[in-house]
Image (cartoon, rainbow, N blue to C red):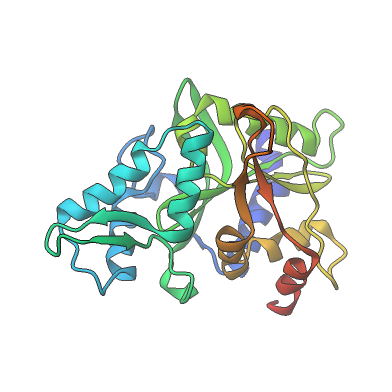
Length: 266
């Protein structure tokens, strides 16, 4: 069953991602330090230096930047802090200049200056071991998790894939404080925000003018330039007035015009 699922869904997903500009790397070839470290540390260090060429960064500065990412908590406040780092950079007082600089970890101005890697069947360990079907890294940071189910069986459907990711959020919280988007890929294809402190989040179909097949439309959303635009401008954490901490939710403000953007960039 698992082999059939990989052939019918997982492998075509990876092929489509490659056509959109993602570089495929087998899980065993990822530059990982350990099974319980979600970040590809060496890849991240390299991209930080490339993106922040105008800042003289020492090894101590790089360690400080990565420590801030790793040190963020896995609760709502930690998720909000991580998203701020993703959008605006990580503030550190550099060792040589002795001034606060915002160190960028994504290059939103020059998309080609980022490293887009997709992999599959990658394992992580938290409260237990999990194996993800497909995971997308940008500059060594995991941002999108795609779980696949055989679309031709009645035993599981897209909602099974959605529930699987929701379970993973609790099993390996250190991974999912970085991951921003989950995709359930089966007889239906729907995306949703990663919000571990909420038991249920709405799943949406990515709609793109000129593409009626949702199996293909999702790859317009996952194009490198569109994904980074969504991360920078269309994802935020909002607290609802009058509620307690649990009322905080990660909100997608992806407008119709945003979806039209994916069409114009095909």
